[in-house]
Amino acid sequence: MKKTTISCAVALAFLSATAVGQNAKSNLDDAFAAIEPKVIEWRRDIHENPELSNREFKTAAKVAEHLRNIGLDRVETGIAHTGVVGTLVGGKPGPVVALRADMDGLPVLERTGMPFASKARGEYNGQDVPVMHACGHDTHVSMLMGAAEVLANNRDLLQGTVKFIFQPAEEGPPAGESGGAIMMIEEGVLDGPDAPEAILGLHVWPGDSGTVIYRSGSFMAAADGLQINVVGRQTHGSSPWLGVDPIYVAGEIVSAIQGIPSRHLDITKGPAVITIGSIHGGVRGNIIPDEVEMQGTIRTFDVGVREELHAKLRSTVAAVADANGATATVTIEGYAPVTGNHPELLRKMMPTINWAAGEGNVVEGRLITGAEDYSFYQERIPGLFLMLGVSEPGIPVSERPSNHSPLFNASEDALIVGVRTLVGFALDYAEVNGD
Ligand SMILES: [Zn+2]
Ligand SMILES: [Zn+2]
Image 1 (tube, protein in one colour):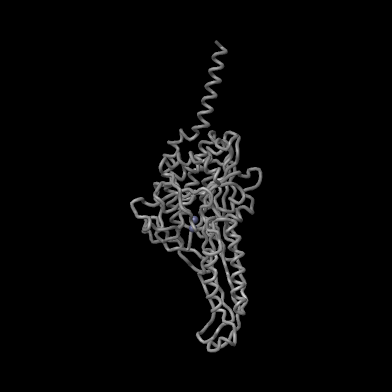
Image 2 (cartoon, rainbow, N blue to C red; image 1 turned 180 degrees about the vertical axis):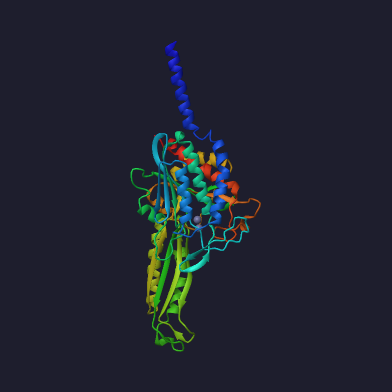
């Protein structure tokens, strides 16, 4: 009798442990219902008070105060200027995972007309500018604050440790400063005893509100800044044969480099874009100048394609310049590698993403030629980067304001889906990645 009782108790304990393991999220409905209005309120507040890259002082202070109030085990501030990292140790041992939100706004004059629209101003590279959360980082901060609170209140369900990374300057630090993901990593957010083994980031996007958009492998482009300086020899505009015309050579270069993606790269490995967005040379019509400076951007989705493009760009520019008796220098400055979703991790986490958004609301996206400095975390550890749709479905896709538009807005209904995705990843990671 006693023996039977014991084995029943053991069996029950085993069953309940299994149930908690498999359904750690099943009892969180009340927690999500309670957090949703808070996330919306935080988002409105942060939206109304945006701050530029590396100047996220008030935002960081709000985040740090919240993380301390909810009883995280550790809250570190001042990382990479204004970054905040909170650490929550779960009730059960397990791996360390990271969840990341970026905090900065943009020099954009908001035209949404919302009651909590920004009237803020800031200084950007010496200029007084309007500031707006035109990329939706206000929602990223508030969703991660919400996820931290839900997880902190349910730490007994958490197997392992979660690092909440609130990152400054995703849009790029001001001229002459460093910052962003690369600086957070340099300052050790992926190192130490709590080194995360995987990371999740979300970004709001003009997809249908509440959908989660993924892409296995490459999702967002690698971005490189490009500068080409062409040096000729100045002469009178009436007598070009007496000098070397760098404007003519620059024109040839602009044409020739467009042949690289279309004629030389294996585009089955991923598309590529080269854009020259700025050309400067000369002061008046009858003087052929000494020099022309061009600036541009390069986008690729494959490491090999990126390297090949850079090499071909250098050789093409040199050859065109040489053929015309000019010289040219090419400077390529890497902004960010490819951002994407680790295929195996994505496959394992897909049931969690489906749970978070609801079946039918998880959709495969197209390649995005924009870039993200989140890719630097993914150079170090496997990660997922998911887009959260925040546009009203009734509006045609072509009419939805894009990120960085003065009209960009995020549907508040979608925010809880983001919170669920972040919480679900933290709770399920250990289980789906266990032996
Ligand atoms: Zn942006
Ligand atoms: Zn962004």
